[in-house]
Amino acid sequence: MKKVYLLLFSLQLTFCGTIPKVNERALLQQKLEAFQFLSKYHHQLHIMIGEEEGDIKKAYNEFFNAAMNFDNIELIPVKISMQKINPNNVNKNSESVKRLDYLVDYYQSGLSIQIEAIFRGYGHLEILDFENAMDLYDKIKKN
Image (cartoon, rainbow, N blue to C red):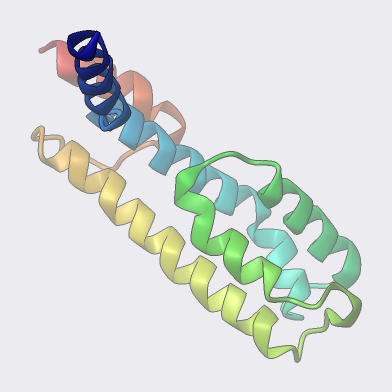
């Protein structure tokens, strides 16, 4: 009986301690989706900081709802920063709104560099079309 418990305990330790491995393609996919998300919602951020015309509260709600409903590990810092904004006091002079803008600007640039770095590692030195990047990646990987 002790051997059975020992075996079950060993199996539990083995499987519970297993960390799922993320492959390069999945990592690239996450980075691309996050980059594209930030590109899509950058307009709302510019409205929020007063660089573009529009309803600041509406822009905040659109950005916030989209970010919170988008499951992507790369967006964790953006989500945390958005949660620091008081939804009842969203305005272009808000320090937390400005910090979100700084974060998104730099984060998006960083994602771009990381994505391009993966392709450069395969010898692709041309300008990258992010819309078709996964197709290109799959093509490069076959060769």
